[in-house]
Amino acid sequence: MQLLTRAVVAVFGSLLASSGAFAQDYLPLKGLAAVRVEIAIDEDAQACGVSETALNTVASKAAADAKVAVSESAPATLSVKVMTLRFKTMDMCVSSVRAQLAASGYGPLPYGSRSVPVTYLLVSVSGMQSQPKDRHGEAVAGVVKTFADDIATRIRLANQ
Amino acid sequence: MREGSRIMFTRLSPPGDLLARAMLAASLVCLAAFCVAAPASAQKPDAELRGITVVGVEVEELGSQAAACGLSRDTIQAAMSKVLADNGLKVVRDTDTDTYLYVNVNTVSLATGLCVSRYDAFLYTHVSARLPYQDQPVLVQVSLLHEGGLAGGGKAGHAENVIKNLKGYVEQFTSRIRAAGQ
Image (cartoon, rainbow over all chains, first blue to last red; front, side, top):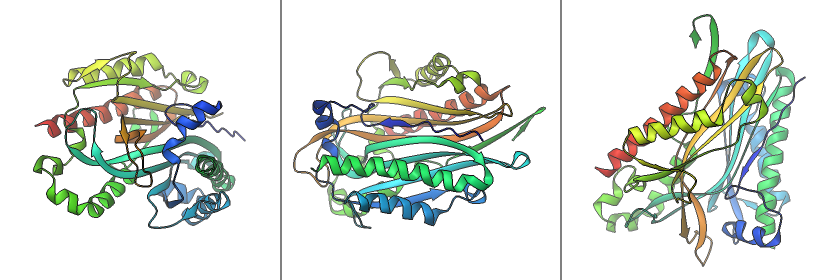
């Protein structure tokens, strides 16, 4: 089995460990106490055993475990998108998984003078998974758990 | 899709970014009172793109499997820069610019010789903004545009397919920027 996970984490482009960098990078998460969870998967993902309900459960549990409330009226959305290619002849599935935390707002942009509706990207994490079909759904759920745990932990740490 | 003797699969994300669209729609509803009072130009489609004339280009480093599948960071950077410049935008490199095209390609090379790449093009900017749950403004990234897809097939032609699709996305971006500015 070939198992590959590559994560690209973008919180202003980097994961920084020093306390000064931490404070700066996590400022946009300070004060955030609740998120809305949104899952989107395509038809091939479903055919490869990926379950929207299971991913919603995984992501919501990760948030709850980090003491981040899950609410439809939350000011930020934790979205997970899975896009899959299924290679039937090889019984293989390859998925890209992207988890993002974003909030909507309204304000001016650097090149404009008027206020407009905007989407603030707070955290973005992505990776890929490839497995035989019978193990793929579980593997994707594992990646979503890792990503959701990471995002939820950042929120928790920002609010300590 | 089938191209000659090669079989390639390409999965494209729905037009636009679903999250961004959903959130923008929600914000429009929540901020209806503000929008009613806002100038007409701010309510046009893609109002957030109006005024963009200069962009940076940042291509994320590619992994070894992407290179094994024929992808090159420099080639992608040059191709994206050319599309932007050909469509009237000033492209700046190696400088700190608020607004930039960000391209990310993740590739898996399967044991069978197949290559699968996830490719995304984003248009980002940075602003100092007060988030809905905060009292003070903070520096935050703004997602202006996003398109992405998944392509798989034999190594031959894989890189060309990925770059062709990325170029298509960036052409869409420039069209929308141009339309927003009119």
